[in-house]
Amino acid sequence: MIEKLKQIVLKNKDRLFYVCDNECITYYDFWEKIKYYSYYLKRQGTGPVIVYGHKSVNMLISMFSCLLAKRTYVPIDISVPRKRIEDIIRITNADLFIKNEEIDNFKIETLKLDELVKYHDELEKESISKYVYIVFTSGSTGEPKGVPISNDNLENFINWISNLLYNNKKVNVLNTANFNFDLSVADMYYSLFNGHTLIAMDDLNYDSMFLRILKANVIVATPTFVKMCLLNPDFNDKNYNNLKTIYFCGEKLEVQIVKRIYERFSKIQIINAYGPTEATSAVCASIITKSMLNNNILPVGDVSSAATIITIKNNEIVLSGKSVFDGYLNSADGFFIDSGDKYYLTGDLGYIKDGLLYCSGRCDNQIKYKGYRIELEEIENVINRIDGIVDSCVVPKYNENGVVKYIKAYIVGNRQKDDILKFLKERLPLYMVPKSIEFLSKLPINENGKVDRKKLINL
Ligand code: AMP
Image 1 (cartoon, rainbow, N blue to C red):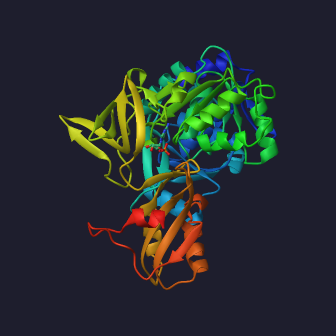
Image 2 (cartoon, helix red, strand yellow):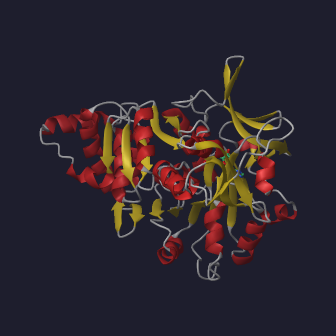
Image 3 (cartoon, rainbow, N blue to C red):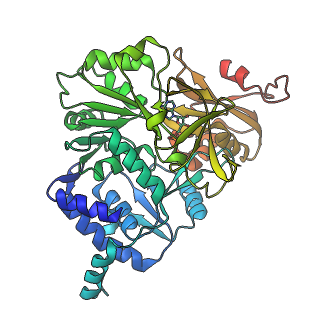
């Protein structure tokens, strides 16, 4: 992987690797910096490294310096609350914390020049660490689950996505997700390993957002993001004529949205990709043609060209093979072993028809809200830790199209709403904090003796 990266850098020396806010960096400068800092990182230890920051050149330099130094990086966005960061440090056993604005302070004072030259010569001959990165997803036990992704997982993904998208012609790729979400793995590694230019959406600032999109040839985003773009009537092929492809992943792509995109961009290529963080960003994808828009559900992937093995077991999508991670750092969930092979149970309900995979819902209480993955039990577990709370049930509230509008918590207990919200905001990312709280004297129970979630969803 490192040798390949070096070849790409040599071929694209003067090309911009990354553009963000008011800063940018060429492939050559990027490579020189990560070589330098990786030397420092290698001498500091061997454990995972927390890379803390947002969208900046230094954030990328920090992550890829870890890759070169054979140290697993753990990206954490500045929006993650402090107590959750403490959980992540404990779970990963990380022994170094880099604030991305500080990486420039790394000084290799004790450096012997010949040692550095030797290090650079040897660099590409060495294999990289088993786990390249660890990202965290919502966990039903009340703490986030750490997903380590190996060098083999990632290499397999890079090959798959490079075959799917442009790999000869140079393009500008728009990164919309923060680096602690695995959607960013798709744009970042696809762009870097094909010599493209990655353009960062720094923040959801409406004006700067459209300035970035103006330059993009490929957008990598959730449907939620593109729905927001469609609110702007000027978002069409007359004004945004560079835009050639939208790669969707992460949540259900509604037929209605694709119809609206085709009305504005008649020649655009729309790709609907599917996959969980546990199987390295995405495992399959379908090109959504206009003829597919007569159905009420869109395919999420062509099984024959998938990055891994996809099967259906009891209506659930099951993944095995090269894309699938080894297991969570802090949970044994999600796997079954059959004849020595390991299978990952996605929790997604689905079926395969004419070689295409369809995703039809969930068999648990995981939801997608504004593109974010949330285990509702994680929120309940945190609420139930508050003194004076007896029980709670957190449910999604849907709009008429079946899309989650907001999250609501039904709580039995004696606490002020403000105290509860303060406690939650200290521990959960903002998108997991319920918009609305209602107190009940007891939670409704269904005929199986369980909390009647359906009743609360429709209340
Ligand atoms: P994440 O780990 O955040 O990438 O979320 C993975 C989950 O997002 C999957 O297990 C699915 O429930 C959902 N998902 C991902 N891609 C799609 C898609 N194209 N259509 C429907 N659901 C999707």
